Image (tube, rainbow, N blue to C red; front, side):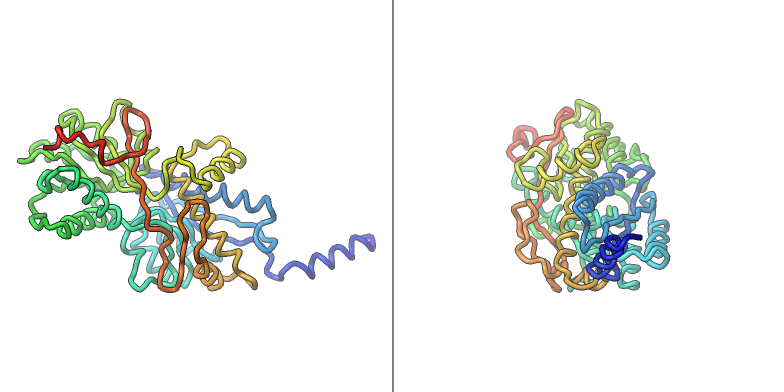
Length: 389
């Protein structure tokens, strides 16, 4: 080895922290099965942002590495993956897990293992303790927030409470959506909620025909159906029911994924709405321009969509927290760094203000309509009052 090379090597060692290996992070999500599009898209969004940062040298000279394990949207597998990533793979944090039924089992693990669970793709209350758990931090609003906005809009549009029905997955996610809507109706003065029609289907299945038949036999024809389901069974339900009830509106919680739902619906589907935690893709937000640029640069084969955009956003927020860490990046310092984010705008035009008492990044929600194979912004004025009176 020449003298100059030896000197350069010594200088590099002196300038690089002793902990300068990869910053290893974990994700357990559905990469296969009926909800695979959601898990794959969140992963793609996170990795696109991490690739962008790694090309610039990473964080403190360290590369961001994401270890992703498939849970098929099943709680038992998610729990196994969590323990394996934390205990054996030594990840510093978990980011971007997908689903409420899986969160029900992974939240206790993240608290027990004192390892951050950040930016889960779920609005479930299990992720939103009051006061917040130190080891759970969210990007998105809750399903209670989503259903409150939906119920307020539906009622203000002239639809009567007794004309509202529910289609939900038979698990913690479906329960969260249904109870959120029921509580919202009660806040709006309607208390006969036990009289409203509520049909369900089994997670990871397409068995929705019974739910369709039940609603077709309902004493009062539903004018608005609030849906807490995955994209494939939700699309099947809409397709079957819309043949008989063409004027009914279908309002989907964000978990469905607007692009995934659109891809699963017939081209002539209409009156379908998705509430989501990211803006319309063609709107003018700096974060969208950045996302589209880096997706094209690092993942050119991928089509932009709302779910991978959310993955990109949570990765960027996470990175902002890392940038505030002056010393060693550890499990605890990552949380401290995120809690120091105040008035931070990542390109959404909304300041992010985390603290020890606030572990939710934003409260804003956007609404998207699916109309004959196209996505477009939704406004409540689009409801035809002649159809709902």
